[in-house]
Image (cartoon, rainbow, N blue to C red):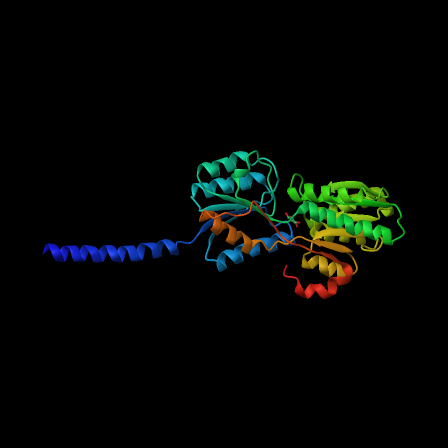
Length: 321
Ligand code: AHR
């Protein structure tokens, strides 16, 4: 071949390759490995749907693993995401402690990590890029403030409170308890007389409430449940014991799922503090930034409201979960 012709052909091939390669690179979908806590509540189902829908909408390949509320399953899933060389790992940690080793493994493999919904206790904060989720202490405070106000408006009598805690060692259980206690201590007539975990599920919420009712009967004035599902389970136990939930026992809970709004409309629940599970869009946005090396805030907090029973009927049609 004539040398000039060869040069022209080589130049054309190079131009074609340089036009095609960046396009192919740009088209490569972001791959996220996501380890979910489980499917323990209406909230969690909505959270999973939000993450899956947003990934689909954003063209993200999502490798999803359900940990069935067990930390060891989350650790296994994270290790498998590392082995698969995903672009980013995201997870909602079932409990706060015990993550240092596996997160160090992700860091050594140069795979960034984003926490959604719940926090971790780690010695090195650089083990994760950001935490996207609610302020659980503030949610507990909001529940406490509603009750303080209720007590004031209802003759300031002594109130015996039973508490259904979330999963032992989880951030929302620890923080919602702390926030609530911080506020109610302002009124010494408000006393938490029993507290036990219901693991964020309806079944356990019902079981534990049955036990509370057996031991304390009609002396229970208030139930504080760390989520709506446990409150809904407890409502069944209260009715089966021949009492009126929402009247004989005042019920304060957290999440703001549709089931809670229906219970409020039926007069069986008094207030729910909102905790939004719709974290998918924020996760996808932060993941892209982190993978592209752009800065993200270390903490991305979600804004939330409080819904007392008297606004439930008006608000229910606007609820997205
Ligand atoms: O971490 C958020 C909590 O987990 C929600 O309040 C609860 O419903 C869920 O299971």
